[in-house]
Image 1 (tube, rainbow, N blue to C red):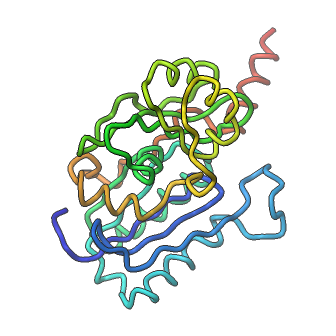
Image 2: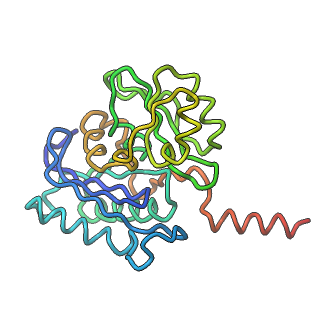
Image 3: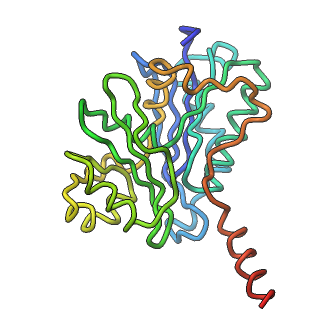
Length: 246
């Protein structure tokens, strides 16, 4: 990391948004806020990421005793995950970076999730629920740096399970792994407990310290998150269009 000033890290790729301030060796503040995702039916009276993210960032900086101008950069979870959550985090991060002319780093939210379960010489397979039988999946090793074994994809859990079965001593982590625990354990994988179900902003701080060039964004205005597939509304519109063509 070029600067030793504290970084601000943001991830809202799942229903749990996390904000952290610090660096790879010291986390000054980390806050997690669970909010409903569109169509989830969870806690319907509570505000979503669009309402909670900026106030939570302000609160995290206040707890850390820092003004925004004292930050050394911003790190964001680039997805995949909730289309709305990723878009909100990306827009917020780009806005702060642009306003303060700060360095910008972005890492896959799946990598942030895998980092949370760092284990030497084991294959870490982060899985985030993509609804129905689908998951967002990747495979990493830390030996000791970041090794990308399988780049992030959106895939059917059956396909992912076959890939996991071919890996010795695999650890599956995330809400997608918990949802499909039976299939994954039958394939010989270890499924991490609920504590590890979502990416942590503190993991993004570690990545910006340990693998800065991997995540450095040279042109923040043109950078876009890693959605991997169209939003739910776009998929519905496409399906209706195909139906109208018949």
